[in-house]
Amino acid sequence: MKFSAPIVAMLVLAGGGPAAAGIPEYALVIKNHVYQPNELKVAAGTKFKIRITNLDATPEEFESTDFNREMVVLPNSSIVVYVGPLHAGSYGFFGDFHRQTAEGRLIAQ
Amino acid sequence: MLGVALLVFREVLEAALIVTVVFAATRGVPRRGMFVSAGIVLGVGGAVLVALGAGFIAAMASGAGQDIFNAGVLLSAVAMIGWHVVWMSVHGRELTQKMRALGGAVRIGSSSLAVLLAVVALAVLREGSEIVLFLYGMAAGGIGAAGLAAGIALGLGGGVLVGIALYFGLLRIPLAHFFGVTNGLLMLLAAGLASSAAGFLVQSNLLPTWGNQLWDTSWLLSNGSLAGRTLGVLIGYQASPEGIQIAFYVATLLLLLAGVRWQRRHLPAQ
Image (tube, rainbow over all chains, first blue to last red; front, side, top):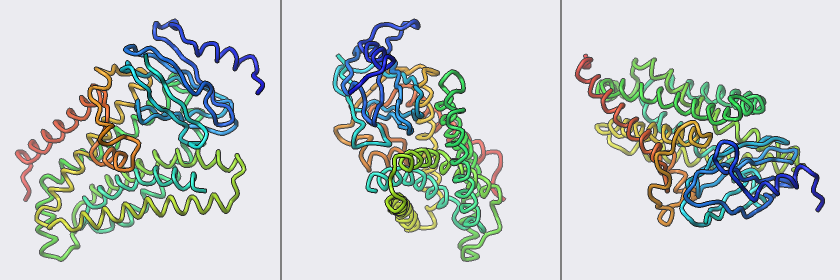
């Protein structure tokens, strides 16, 4: 699979690190209706935000019934969703518009 | 096709449950069928407009537009339902008496028809706009017209059937208790919608959480299950709620109860 420069940058950002506001930011990318990465390690016990970028030509809905979030991500755009603080554990999320392929987990530790 | 049916079913179900409870609560009011239909038509039209303007809404308020919009729609529905609950706390008895005397048709409650119309329109608009965005994506993704149509028909039919089943279930409640029960259901429904609105505002960091994951009953009933979703709409069930959601839920219930008491004391039924 070929990655363009912006995707690589976002995948690097996915490693995490405090953003300007002091709230850690993580990144997810949706491409071909799949989350990259599909497993995201986040810090337990602190509020954080996830920037989700949809590189597909169709809308997606970022959703989790484990940590109660849902927001539409339009084609070629990104959203920011605030989550937590979460207890340590594993939390599923999915793309409500493409459930068969768009699945992932947050690992809070 | 199955994917289309499942998504359409989930969204239609949520709207259908709200429409059903409000429709039951306006039992005996003439012309309510026409107003529900008008609410659905308005809601579908609104859903298409919201989907078309999704880019504009998403970009508002530096990215918080979607959440503010959703919370606004939900809180408008809460206000409408709340107004109806307070009004019915006095006129419900009157309505019951007249239904007994006249066998159903009652010349009362044109204001509750306006509430019915608005709540139905808002519920359909909210769930419908997601369906429109989803279907647009499916169509653009190359699903055939036949698969799309079959999926929509199955999902829509399933959701509406559940609503109809709930409606006939509610009709089995004896008339003497009927409006008491539907009024109680409306209060829980409104409280749940207010709690959802708080959840949307927390998601954009516009409200504090006041404690996250205060408890977790997902082992018993998960939010993602059909029963969990159904109770989520009807009574605001959340497996692991945030503190602010509980605050919105309790505050809505208390406000409605206070409104009902005030109404009974100051405006006794004729």
